[in-house]
Amino acid sequence: MRDLNDFGYFVQVVKYGGFSAAARATGLQKSLLSRRIRLLEERLHARLIQRSSRHFSVTETGHRFYEHCIAMLEEADTAERSVAQLQTEPCGLVRLSCPVALLNFQFGALLARFIMLYPAVTLQLESTNRRVDVLKEGMDLAIRVRFPPIAASDLVMRTLDTSTQCLIAAPTLVPQPLASPADLNAFPSLDFHTTPGSHSWLLENQEGQTATIFHEPRLATDDMAVLREAALVGAGIVQMPTMMVWQDIEAGRLVRILPGWHPQAGIIHAVFPSRRGLVPAVRALLDFLAQECRTQRNLATEVFKTSP
Image (cartoon, rainbow, N blue to C red):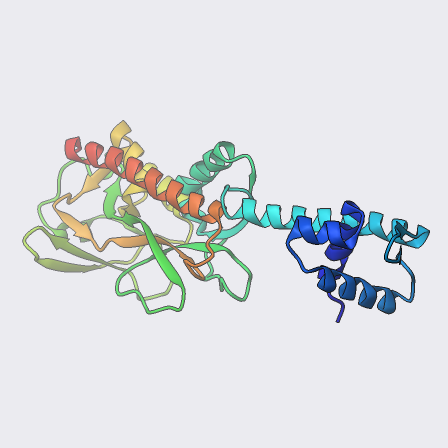
């Protein structure tokens, strides 16, 4: 196997005009430089340097080889600097996936702002509701929404937000507050789950009391945008993430149903292979999303404090 260090030794000898001068400048032994250049010439089957006790000169072949060695060493230096830059500045490509509804209602706008904030970063985004295999598919991270208990995984998880849920409806459908969870059965419903027989709301109040309300939805779909539109026109009561409807509640387009009873909250988190070697672009994206989620959560909390 060729030793690329020999190319560097040769460049130093030519640069300083001899073995003795190169040895003094680099701190390497003269005998090492002489031996490595001799082995290099033997491997190339070419004379690169004419040398004697009183004379040192570079052959025509040596001059041509020197120019190529300089170019190679400059490319190697550029390669090292590019890696160092990736380890210090947010830049380069980040591959990620995110659920469709989360992109439409929250993360799409955040990711757009992120690439404006970090122009040297490029995002390759897959919008999907399937469970992406981060390792097999070469993703840098996957954003997920899961409900406890969350199964153990070999991936590192970073929590970005809590996906608090609420029951909502159009004010024309439910003009008066309901007294108890049992009253929900008097109204049509909508649901995110499409599996037959799995439609229920699991509710809990501040005293720790729980209630399970089974229902038959008029519309069942895994598209949150469709559920929101159906709720807005008064088609039924639906459980939705608060971050997707808090602006509708603030504007009076939707109202909370049984605000004293809360569905189980989910966890919005990012999973990635390892914290070790996490490039600055991925780290910057995670920090940005976590901070923006906190800001939006605070805004939504203020709205919910004042909503009926």
